[in-house]
Length: 148
Image 1 (cartoon, rainbow, N blue to C red):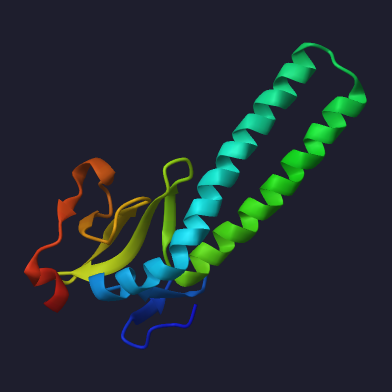
Image 2 (cartoon, one colour):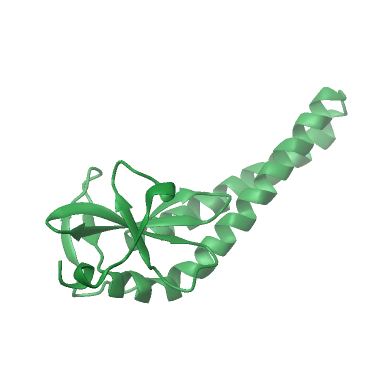
């Protein structure tokens, strides 16, 4: 996804430039990240199912061939999930919940870093929360957020 020139950048902990989003830039990013998040949630579900299948095969002491087939599927799923996750983090947002598709976008509000918060299925980024708080403490975006 092309970088939006209106976003500010700071150095993140991994040496990358961290993008700071506004509600407007986060909402524009949704067009790109929605399908990634859908794929991540579906892939995570498939991975959990495959791990359950593997565990059942191991408990039943099934043949090595059956377990090997499931291990290959697990490896392929993990590789795909890692690629999708990297694609998402390259945009500058953070996946907080693999099963529910909860994504946070770093932002500034009243001079401090906060998270803009979006969950799979929501039409837009319309909430935020403090860095040390989570989804349960998110607040509706106010008019002051755009100018902060």
